[in-house]
Length: 481
Image 1 (cartoon, rainbow, N blue to C red):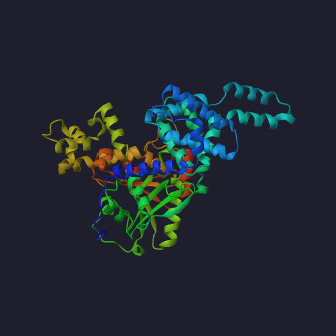
Image 2 (image 1 turned 180 degrees about the vertical axis):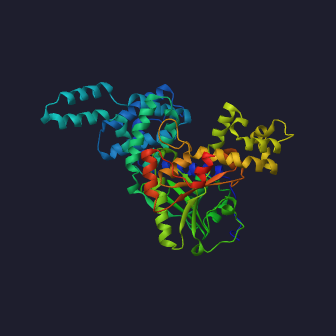
Image 3 (image 1 turned 135 degrees about the horizontal axis):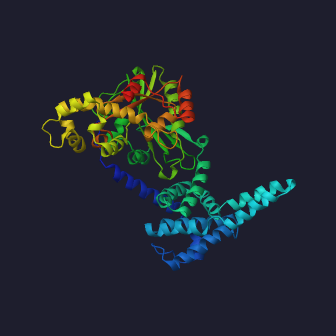
């Protein structure tokens, strides 16, 4: 048996609450002593919702941070106190804090125009200085402030979480979007993959780190400690990227099952009662879950490097491994299909032979096959499920082979991720995930993406350069059918 010791169970959301509370507590504690003298200088802390009179004092506090009065110790104290102030605000107060940085500490557009004009008019011997002047004008004052947080204990994590709060506010708001662009640029330079450390996570890892795996798992929810232990057994692997300034916070992690043959159903990979196999006898590594852990790092990609590094590590550790593939969700297929059904009707998406078979199997069902598909009752009708399989697989292959109207990018986000990494669309798996989430996203279908060492680079180049999706012959035949 994969698990024998009873443990207290928590839901994933419960673990996430614990993780977030602990993170906030760590930040406050880390900055308490640093900011102690600064608190005396700025007076009482602002009220949680940051009313206007408190916002004026906070604005002056931000100005003091930028003016750089005193030495490095004073600057460090002011930055720590400003960070502690943010952490103690309510959601309303935090939004006002961010709005202040966006509106009052952005670029001076007049200064940018003046510096740009000076560069255009500069004599050759003055061009280098004019370029430096323009670069300085293009850097918003808030960027200097953000860099001050970087030097504090847990400061990088603070900025990552700050961006997570900023992202939803930046949609449709040009000032917030410009602020987000500044913060994204800083984080992208600090989180270059060359700075990251790849670690294998085992059951012996600290409990606080294991809790984070439960909290951050985004593909197949980890139900409890027993489920987690199952995913860390001898015939499983879990690898994560870490940053040296966030050593206890995974940035992204991948879960791998060591099996024989390419898996076509998720349930056996998550089965806690299955016997633990000898990993040395496995010939296939199945990547069945990849989860980004830090919302504030959206748009900064680590996944492509993660998979390639893990393939190298597993190949070196287990010489019998010949095949590297995924068992992946198709998260937006049902949304895509529902939109097409809404446009033309389900019957119009069927080939004549498919329509005849589906109508026969759906005889007597109120609303027909379309209604059974919409309410999920089709899965309990074997004859109807059999009739629906050919058109759903055909439409699924069509979806996976489709590009966005604007740009050479697969319309499915998971497909885009793996195609960018050099994989090919290998096989559709019928009723591979019968969970509520799997049925809601893709009528239970999943897909295998295959990573072959001899074609990864070529697949990557053809996809990124030409928008060409690499796929097996069966997938191509389905999509054309």
